[in-house]
Amino acid sequence: MARAWVFGDDLDTDQMVPGRYAPFMVGQDKFHTYAFCDARPGFAKEVRPGDILIGGENFGCGSSREYAVAALKKLGVGAVVAKSFARIFFRNCINLGIPAIESADAMEIVRDGDDVTLDITAGVLRAPRGAAAVRPTAPFAQEILSAGGVVAYLREHGDFPRV
Image 1 (cartoon, rainbow, N blue to C red):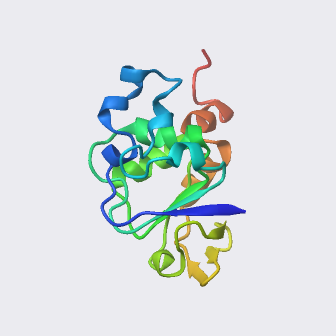
Image 2 (cartoon, rainbow, N blue to C red):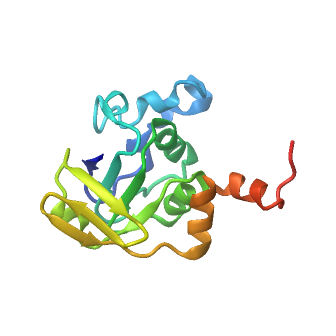
């Protein structure tokens, strides 16, 4: 079962991976180990594959750091559920294969560390204190997520040159 990591409103990409730990600064093999190093020390060592981030409004605001989402992907984050997303962060999640799901009520039923279940098809997030509806994912985004990200999707559909 997935564990929830709860964050508040206006969580920016610099809190996810500070600029001083960008891949071009510390290397592609290490940047993800600094995820939330200031905001949630220990996150990168404690997060488990499939865990779900829960947030409030404007999740992923700030700089359009794709490597913030790439760090979450490398750590195995299964999804991000938030009241609303910064649009470029939302798009980066879909492009890299991480479901970014909107829910007006997730913050009301989930506490940090709860075991949760996200059923995107049924449109529900379940937690010990109840269930919250989640916004349906657009069909084109579902296809990209099913493929594992936009590059995999394009390769699968023959629209991307193979290198």
